Amino acid sequence: MEEGLLCQWSVFRSLLAILQWWTFNVAVIITNKWIFQKLDFKFPLSVSCVHFICSSIGAYIAIKVLKLKPLIVVEPEDRWKRIFPMSFVFCINIVLGNVSLRYIPVSFMQTIKSFTPATTVVLQWLIWRKYFDWRIWASLVPIVGGILLTSITELSFNVLGFCAALFGCLATSTKTILAESLLHGYKFDSINTVYYMAPFATMILGVPAMLLEGSGIMDWLQTHPYPWSALIIIFSSGVLAFCLNFSIFYVIHSTTAVTFNVAGNLKVAVAVLVSWLIFKNPISALNAIGCGITLVGCTFYGYVRNMLSQQAPGTPRTPRTPRGRVELLPLVNNEKLDDKI
Image (cartoon, rainbow, N blue to C red; front, side, top):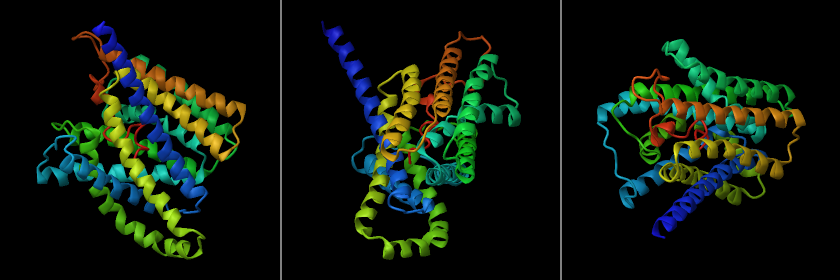
């Protein structure tokens, strides 16, 4: 009886973790798109900077004040030699994601972001000459094919938004690859990652945001009919960005690796559906099919990675195949989570 209750509680806890993760992820994406499209606040650098500031404050409160997670101590020298380069790539990744949201629909942006597994594998193969099982390469075929079909049939195609999303995939892959060497010896969770990287990202982005977008923001404040209510929404998106990172920590500790992978791909489908219901961007049948093929390919890729990670010792395996749930999570936001801050 007790075992049955524990099993039911475990299932309920996993579902609750997934739902709150989906909620925060979709809320961040939709809010950002709303800021760019409905509020006419076309300043992606400043929006990203607000996210970094809110995430820095939130991580400090979570670790130092509420003590929800123990602080992983990093030597001052390592902060500049290891954390700072990671923060720079992390900053570029988030900015490119917000730039793409300004110019292309959420559905198209999310589909392109699903290209991250392919860019990660190709970069590791080209630069690090790493071996990958043929099943890994096979799982990338539907991802690439689906994105090609989606791009060709996208009715709201924008070159700048497409390139920003595509280079965002490269930035995410670079961040994940660099983490293997730069952060060797440190076992970061999502909260500690934000605690160290978000302040650096704020420092990196603060000056460019003021120089490039400062005058435009002042003009926007003078011409917008409801600037203060709009500013509340903008800063609320920053709070949601931190909540998303915290929800990632919760869902990892409440689900299995396979569940996490499947839920991540279903989350993209939920984000696409909700964004379409709100913004009514046109989606053709072939475009929807391409998006579906991409998500199936991502799910298959995750399944293959997990299957190879379960191989017996001594069996040839894909290099750096994640061995546990935490390793399945890219350093901050993932390929699925990198749209988090």
